[in-house]
Image (cartoon, rainbow, N blue to C red; front, side, top):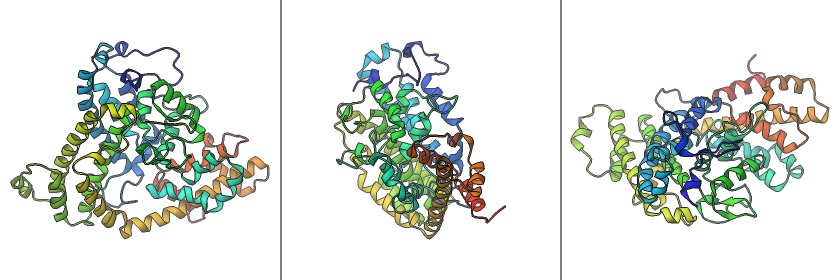
Length: 444
């Protein structure tokens, strides 16, 4: 892979090249990407989607929106610092007009979208959609779908749903948000389809990155960027290098900030903060730490220094392995290769035990499973009954609740089901609960 091609400013529908040197420096194309994302309805819904604690009643716990913004801030720093060195290594990019801010803008835009496809109720929402089609009432559709279409459903993936949101055309709007292909490439952490599932231990095979409904858009992006094929037969490719920085930004934030949330909620003892986060920090100023009166201020101090330390590590690892990354030979995440891997795993293990498996989280995730299964069943049944010409009066009423853009008539069962999955996945936690109450007669 080569950087000139990987930094493509092309957008869906372009018929001519967009040279970097011809860009308006007051509003660069990569910065336009960020603006379009921030103003999108899909991004706004993240303000009421779970990051750690579903439907938390406190005012300081992170949502998907605040988490995404913080990941973007870290991603921008990673991109700029890497970009500065890459421009020294590849002076041809300077001649073409690229600056280190371009790298920062691409990673920031891809980072702010990294969770845009996540359903309500956190990662349990993905599992709830998958299980509805694998072991729930949706299993009856298996024989009517191709193997890859069915795998898309039973392994419903937020990353693939995010790509759908960013690129999906609908009436009057072609190419979704029409982001630059460089940003879309950096977004694709798992540039492969749902089957075969985990064929190797390489990081790109951990999950998948697009649904069958977006295969054409995916291949268009991949070909423009010149991403190296891993298996053409299975539409599998090695990552855009900047996807490693997007992943690192997310890993850094959820490792440290989820841990911080757990401490502020009282789920983790504060003494763990100093014990574990100080292992990521060189030269902590203990006088300054103990001079801070409140727990949240002390943990915030540790969090800031720990994040900076991990940023240094990620930048160093990326630059030391640039050639391997461009060749597709770097098979792990950046933080899996860092010197703090053991300490990071210790923090994650505590977070799993004390936060992710806390009673409050599990109780709300259980409720989320039921809510999502019921929503899928009611809407999928209504849409299919209408297509088959035998929809009941209840189905007709239900379809009045379904926004018009999700009622596009198609003879393809897969497309009809995906429309409903897309609708449910874009719901905020609270909206999913309210809709469920209406459909089950608990509220008028």
